[in-house]
Image (tube, rainbow, N blue to C red):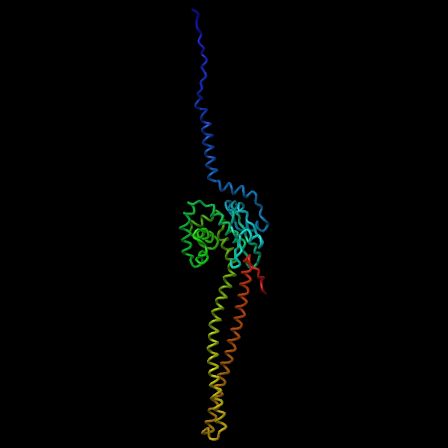
Length: 338
């Protein structure tokens, strides 16, 4: 019987070696990780690519640089494409048509628009407004969990600064209130809880500088309002004093005139005065009364001159306040008055 030689070549198997599964598994895991990262940073990536299309004007570039933005702040700044606008464009883009309300800027359709107020007297107003609207964009990008974490901190700020915030925030709906409180806390309040300071430090290298911009432009308004209130109170008090003294003077003058008439009638009637001494004594009394009335009259005139000077100063401040209001109101058609 012939020897049978067996084929020793191993048969091909359809199974792959275990080592070949590792690259595929790693690839799959990497793909999942990439997708997760893309989802996690989808807002940042979207902002990055939107920002590539934005080229700020020379003025807005200066404003951007003055704000001291961090990388995160710069990314959101570019993504929202802040624009300085003239009256007509601003009113259209921000839908600002209320002549009674001064709107300085708006954040709408993920874009920031700033009314171009170029006034040395209101230095800092464009920087402050840009930072204000930029923070609206930041708030819109925060997750619900992050907003919820900030709420008690913001309410703490409100409680400590109620007098300066309550009137402004009262104009906003409940849905808008936290957004506005968040923005105003960052741009207007000098001292914040440490956790809030750390939060805003993600976007501004120096939040204190942002507050300085706000104070720089709001100070003329505050000083004018305080001066107008002070003068108004002084004028009211001075007017009351003048009216009271005028009434006293007129009454005393009328009484004096009657006394003079009586004296003259008595002097022209023989035997009316018992003696020359009585005549001279009564005459001296009337002269003294006349001198006293003259002094009151002089004092009244001085008070009236002071009152008129204060009225002129009061009206000048009202005029200046109106001019400043016209500067910041994009719907005001009243030119500044001299």
